[in-house]
Amino acid sequence: MRTTLFTALAAALLATPAFAADPTGLWQTPTRSGQVEISKCGASLCGRLVSSEGLKADPALKDVNNSNASLRGRALKGLTILTGFSGGPQEWTGGSIYNAEDGKTYSGTITMDGDNTLKLRGCVVVPLCKTQVWTRLR
Image (cartoon, rainbow, N blue to C red; front, side, top):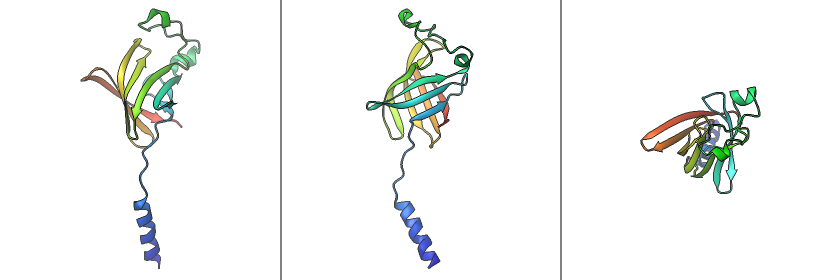
C-alpha cells in the first residue's frame, strides 16, 4: 500500500508541467546596492530603479550623466531602466537597458536561472557585452 501511494505521488509530480520562473518582482543588482522592480508593461517586461547607495544618500538624485542633455533633470528614483523585453518563459530579448552611470542605452537580454536568479546581458554590439547576475529580493 505504501509503495503504491509513493509510486502514484511520484507519477503525479512527474506528470505536472514545470513552470518557468517569473521575472517580475524586486531584484538586487551586484553594483551599488541597486534594486530594480521588474513588472509587466503591456506584452513586455520593464524595470524601474527603486533604490541604490546613491539614492539612499540623496533621494533627489538626477539623471545627470544622460547623453541627452534635455533628460538630465529627471529623477533617478523610479526611473524606467529596462524596457521592451519580450519572449519568455525562460528568456526575454529585444529589450533596452539604460545605464545611469554612463548615460547610455544598451540592447539587452534577460534570462532566468532558477526562481531567484536572473542574468541581465547588455551589449553595445555583440560580442561587446557584459552580463550581471541579479538576485530576487521578493
